[in-house]
Length: 199
Image (tube, rainbow, N blue to C red; front, top):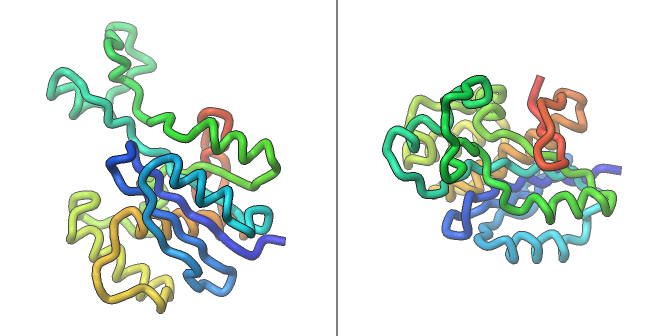
């Protein structure tokens, strides 16, 4: 029996905050927290008592490794790299997603936990939560916080500005809830886990 929906917005490194949210089936935010290192993430899930009663959805963070050249940094998310044999993959610059935490999440799946991955920006577009502001800017966060409060009925969202990681984790919890309703499908597999998207 699924009673809780957990969203984890995983940061690309321990210097970038990760947000975690636990949502119940009555649309109440049970827990909203910030995590940083993978040890924090592991500690949370190892001590989370309702692991078997939850659907967990974890975002796939971008790989923000240092690159040597501005054009590589700017083109990383947009290059058609698989179909172009002339692109030299020096320092693995074509890798778009970080593999941070993949081994731990795969271990959770092997223990029988219902866990999936999601692509944050695709989920925001499908849920009509995408703004015209720069991602993770104060204006974007304020827009996201207001629309979650008004359109999705999260009454216990505070009036003061929430961190971006926590707002993105709420999106992950919404994707988990839509999975239970049958409104998602598998887009592809990443490091042994299904990446789901909204229909």
